[in-house]
Length: 210
View 1 (cartoon, rainbow, N blue to C red):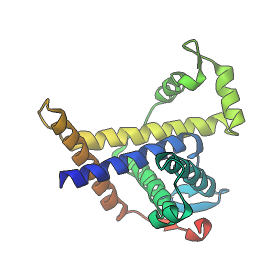
View 2: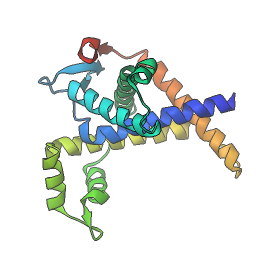
View 3: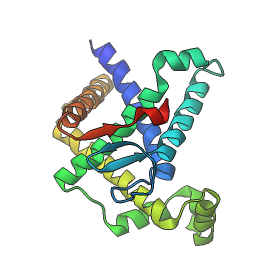
View 4: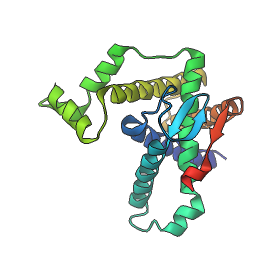
């Protein structure tokens, strides 16, 4: 039983990390932006067409690396990769809805600290504003978009930590016990997200990803 849970927990955590990485650069849709093409919406949080396809390409590239070049269209169809991407982006937005409900937020200083500590913008251990702006310009991202994405990414991590702490902990120094604890917590979090989504208004336009 625990072996099966551990397998699915690692799979969920892997997808969660991939979505977070993608989100940092491409998860820039907001509740108020009415100009974007929307693939799905979770309580007002939009999943834009650009966000979906960027996430899809990122996840497909990661699967190709895992399968060492043997990731075929048949395998992609068999696992329904587009649905996996969509469900994970919906989970991401559900985390933000839960953050609103729990009144979890981050300050401007937390966002600033995250940016100035990012190794991509450092040279010799020092934050370089010119590199920061040039990196965003190359990726065609406005600073306010990137800062909003970082803010929401930090909120996602805060929600996950809150849910993990709410699940309690095992008083043991045994590495196996700690691994089982992480596995069970991950499964509990996913179960909580699934139950929470059932109470949320979720709209999906699958025609845009067919």
